[in-house]
Length: 211
Image 1: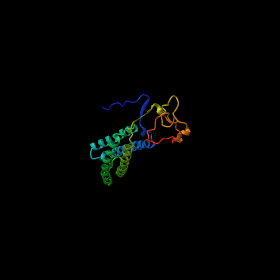
Image 2 (image 1 turned 45 degrees about the vertical axis):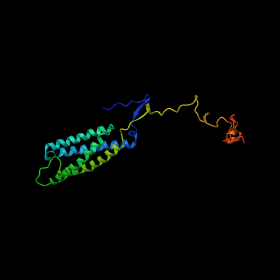
Image 3 (image 1 turned 60 degrees about the vertical axis):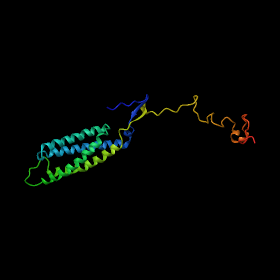
Image 4 (image 1 turned 30 degrees about the horizontal axis):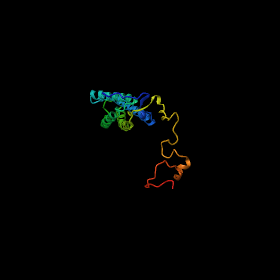
């Protein structure tokens, strides 16, 4: 069971990748292609119901379409986990459509009873399913790589972060007093010979700055 994420006071979790324009566009395209795929499957199944190989095939196809509709709803809610599943189902559907299209065109002959829709129309719709499923695979993988699930912390309401702390009520802009050389007048900082002796005796091992 996933653990809840602890958020600091004054901060909230947000998904930065979901606010990008390309992510919103991809999400909409994925949901639209899923709904188009579901509509095509329902039309083909109901239009050729009398001539399907079995009732089980028709029920399975209707369930497939219902699953696509469910995926479209989840995608609109930024559910990233269904994208690879939708892509895998689309690959399988490409194989089924490639096999079924030839069967519909083969039935378009005199003397054979036609289903609710003409066989040539059903065959054409079945062929259209193939590029639609290929498009579904592409956009689903693009959406998956956009990482919609990434979470980050930000101040509540999206306000900018607080400014850095100040020293003594004023922002530190100049050199700090503890930095070497900052306790001498400006003319002594540039001329070492003007630096006053600090009282230490010269030990002969280092040059006397007063010379």
